[in-house]
Image (spheres, rainbow, N blue to C red):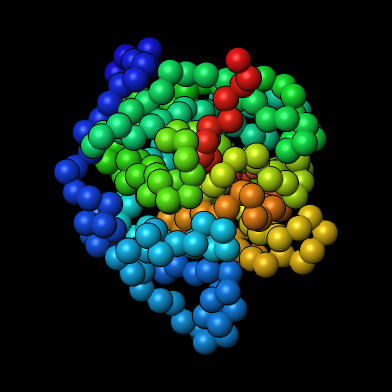
Length: 271
Ligand SMILES: [Fe+2]
């Protein structure tokens, strides 16, 4: 596999429409903020409607679904060689970043670029142009990776005008001596239209609960440990988010939490 990543490389997407692909998926549930309490109370899960993204209210809803059809076995190893995030002290977070767009029937990888958030959205690392290595070519060619990315594009197409998604591949590491912080900036918004968090792996950790809030000082409207294959998608204009610290439960081996964080648009630096 070549080390250099071709710019604007395309991979084939099937000819299926979004609706067709949704029918093929075996995601097991979707909940809006209004429905979740009811579902919890009944201990129920509901099956996804085939037109779920068409019915998704970008302003009021969040989606929480399990992508059962995605096989994580081939994706997991790509989290083992992530570079350390050089902008954080403590070497507990490791990450890569790539951006994609949809062009006709294909996913297109966009030219590599840096990441930028203003201080308004990221008090810790705002106003800093950050540079991360790209996702591995072999990873983005995996069918299971494309499934997850296309899933997020489905939501973006109904909730965001820009046709551009950033994929942050992130591992948070913890030992019994050091906690890991998936969100060191605290309760925040990313400064985009839509955010998705897809869990790949949790091993030997406790904590790492993800929260959604309507305002920074209100009680969370969602509290959820995202387990492997679970995907949370929400409107960044409407919900603040946070993930609590992770702590290792084994003194023998470090604990890890692996996720993809998706945003649309992709937080490019200013010209
Ligand atoms: Fe965030």
